[in-house]
Length: 219
Ligand SMILES: [Zn+2]
Image 1 (cartoon, protein in one colour):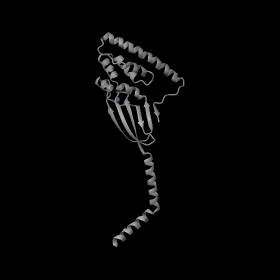
Image 2 (tube, protein in one colour):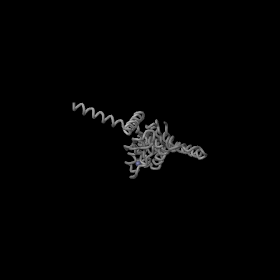
Image 3 (cartoon, protein in one colour):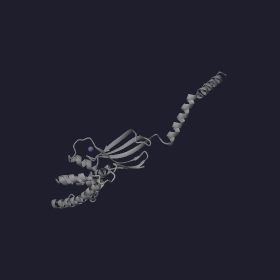
């Protein structure tokens, strides 16, 4: 008997409590938030890659962002050495520095594909062929041409095509001095050609063409 009375008291209190307007409102708001969260999670991840334009170190980042916005709540990055950054470090060609990151590519949080101009240098940084070429020129004392191809690999205009030509074939490091000089002359002529193309393009752009955005985004 006493147990039944206790039960009915509890039920009555619960009924009175849930019947309060404030509790009903809180429940309704909670339900609405739950529905919205289920329909589209409030936080999404955007994963992207960057390269240090000075030393070629690569960085992969995951950013947790408010869904549908670029507002980052938290991010986590991992840095890794590239073929080129290793050669530059071992040859003593980069001094201790604060990395200067250039965006290469990314996806997530509603973006299918975001591409930055850093992708040109990132490709050079990852290339074993290019790293071997820089190491060989450094070892053989060809510092002028070594610095020229490093400069080409960092270009973000038409001159990056000269880089594509340069790494088509792995360099033969058994070349004697005369053969090496011939190879350098041939490559220099190619780079000269693309430098003229890039200069002409820059002149045309100055004529009023729209300035390219640093990052292209596909939604
Ligand atoms: Zn760096």
